Length: 253
Image (tube, rainbow, N blue to C red):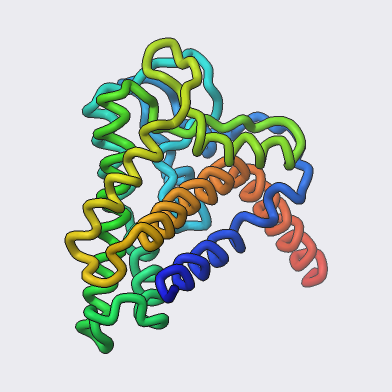
């Protein structure tokens, strides 16, 4: 029950970041230079601005549109998973989950204090690390699925929200880019949950496993929503900042 409470709290925190996105109507604005990530094996890097959402959430798997599709090699998939796993945002997320776990005392064997937090942090980071490599490298390479998120970028906020969430269930195949059930997402995170039993001494039962799986997939779903709407939100915030700066400049004259 305590672990379920921790996972529910974490889900609420991430939902707070994403709730505003589908409630707004965004104009169909072409991606700016800062938004664009080029396609293909040789040109997959993004500009510095697009590597993080809200300055901290990793954004290495996002591509603006599914045009001129080219599949990724296993090496490129490994690179993406490594960038996600070693990013400062992933460490921050592990700290958040670790803190929530310690606060709710979800694994009593970890203890409290600094040592206890270290164990909670290490376990939470292990969950994210293993989940990333399993769902972005191992299973995508074996099943020939693409781990990237391709933005829709047009349409109503509600339709784009539904599209973003649906990517948890549907992804693109390496060959031709046709859609297929996202086995990599579910098998990858399920494998990570199974492996985590090696370092979680408490709650080695079906209920705890299902709760952890739902949390990890839920985090990915919220991440996809943020990836879909972040360029729009950033342009909106930037415009407000420029308008405020001009207003302050005029008032100072």
